[in-house]
Length: 277
Image (tube, rainbow, N blue to C red):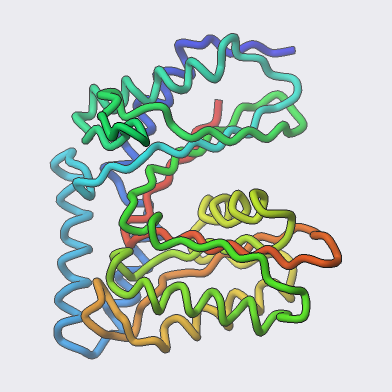
């Protein structure tokens, strides 16, 4: 059994959160530049140019990509042969430290009173045990302009793939400019009520534009991306060719009488940071 010092995890989480809020992953920048290269509408082109410039300035000046630094979502893949004493509390402390040292906006509040917690915590933590002695942590600051546009439905199995596709397209169409497109779309298909939602969010952790290893699922991702971009919503809702940068879909077997589908939207500032300890 390998033990990782708690302070090492705390510091890694703090710095990782700051970097996630300031530095857009290279593949997301490339996707925005690719969208700009293919766009013909002047307003859409100008909007994409501003989004790209904003990302460059944020990284250069050490400033957040967006004023909404989100609720911190954390995915922990913990090797069965690694131990970190008090890991859950250490992660929360790391999130607070990152918020404090990075001068990030405190966006988390008590749900009934709406009083701000003042620490931007607690973050939402998902745990998955995996083989080995490594600890992998993904940080996904989730702004609520996009999060609020997400959707979960328990479809009848008779709805089939057509019903799944219609739900995804309808969700993005109804969201319009609210999630700050071009969006990244995570889709969870299968499991049960809560697992479908977790799958949709987990799908956002994949490198942008990577296809699912199952050819049937990958084909569905491609069809959905084409359908979403045919909507013409465009960058920030001003019209254009690119409404979505990518569609990532994760699946799991479900009950024979159920077809759970969740759609989790992410804005153009698709902030995600992977830590390996």
